[in-house]
Length: 474
Image 1 (cartoon, one colour):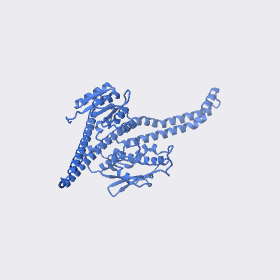
Image 2: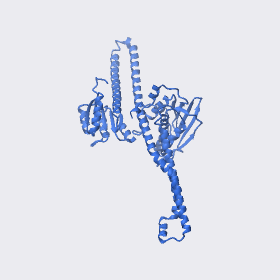
Image 3: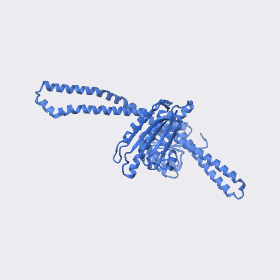
Image 4: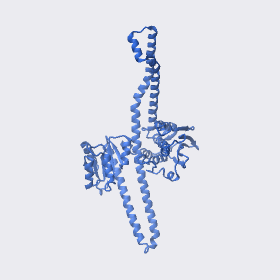
């Protein structure tokens, strides 16, 4: 840790236990600590002494963490201080809200001390890198100005100066690119770990009771049929009922009950089968436990993503149903990190659905038969291609050139982070494959994913680098 920097961390939390645990862990890690028990005190305290990083609880009395973050980011004096939320909220919408307000990370409660320390160290290093780049940039501009002013007397050195400026600019560009790649990997790792745990946990918790219900519906149906047959037999053997029984038969409408009960049980069976299929798709999509390359059926991964996105394909108030046409070729099993490739399918399909929905919203009319077409085929002798195309409005050449840039998005603020396609290309590239876009205005958009059928043997270090870097701390 750089001893020339203060490394001052401000912890804002209304729970004394959290303040004590975090203060002790960070002090042991070599950080200076300041504390505040609510948002108002934190803002006042920062005016006198600005920290290098803020750990901010979301749920607090008075102004909550979101409002506190908004005020800090609205102040030019405090807007550049990194803010990490510490919260028990797990809703994606809450996390997106935090990032849109300017937070750099989330730490979920209950937290692990080691995780907190590692994340803070990572963001402190990133902040130092940004500061160093800014200092280098300022120095470079000063150097250019000085040499430009002395151009008349230093004409012979012009060529050398231009070369030096070019080299320094290239170094800055490379440093900036590395910084963006680091940010993308951090976001990807957090997203993969959080999504994998969430999906796997939901599937595990729901699977057993749903299987129990589904298995017993068959027996319940048999029992009901037996009881109905017994009632009919009673009616045959004892046609003369007592007044009380006659009143009860009229009250329950026995004929309707006999006719409708099998239908009710049948619909319950269909519903439970649907839930079982969704759970299976969630587990297939997640593959959270597969941190090594496995041989998988890509069609299975595509189908699981479609089942998860099924609610977005159905008709809504201002949207027609989106038709999905699957033209699957005969694909061999493919070597890949299944969970990561499934994430690519999910990102590309979500973008296609968004493209079809945005056209309807913009023009206030229906696309003629909005359609997503999925084609798979073997390319050459050693690669497979997955083509996902929509018949939306398409995208311009300028947007195509930037569609895979980190943080680039054409969506409205709060509706997209600009990381989906960048992360997807990075995943495909890690598989020694390619991801590219084919589109023109008015003719829809097609994304093509190509990956090798067999992956080359990776060293342990390479495999560890490919797996989410934050997963081990979650």
